[in-house]
Image (cartoon, rainbow, N blue to C red; front, side, top):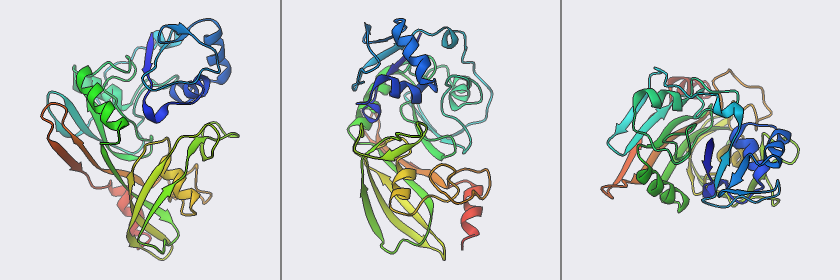
Length: 298
């Protein structure tokens, strides 16, 4: 039994669309599972058109999920901070955060299971400890919960936008103004379901603040602060205003430089500790591959 708890960032869309992203399943497979009563929300049968809400508990009874054991793997982790309640980890570019259908090994979760026996189980066996995610090819800081009480408190803070998340990104073109705010709703792309789009159809509010760090001849290094945390938010928002992220294979039409991935790094993470209530903040520099690409523009 795979259990998923819906967060504010993912709520208010049809359940079949929601699970396409969460499980990497086809729409037809999800619809079949729903039809056969193998997907329930809050222990109730639902239809494909059901709109998921914040704190909904989705249970997926799928033979493939049940037989895909998520095993601990001895993968090195860059732990920035750890205590009895939380782990702050610096995820490398190229690492998937948690297992999904057809991808059950070499994820951050596999590494965390080897590192610690104490991880929250709020989001089920496939995503122990995971409060929020960043894309596979985005590097940087993630917050992990070691028990269910901590997870609930931090998830609430995330929903109420009390957790600080700052990124650095290298974008195409020279941004003329020093600061800006992008306020544009995000929903699933109607043509390519693997992409997001700025749209008013089945969309959620999305706000990104950015500041220029340095300008180059053909690119700009910026800092982005998330007010919301939608899927692909920074990548899509920067493309939307005409400054796509360098090396982004999805939202940038230019040929990628190499296989490092999009030039986006989760640099700063700040939150109120769930036990002590003290505000703590962490920052990590971008990986050397990121810096090397920036240097080619300097």
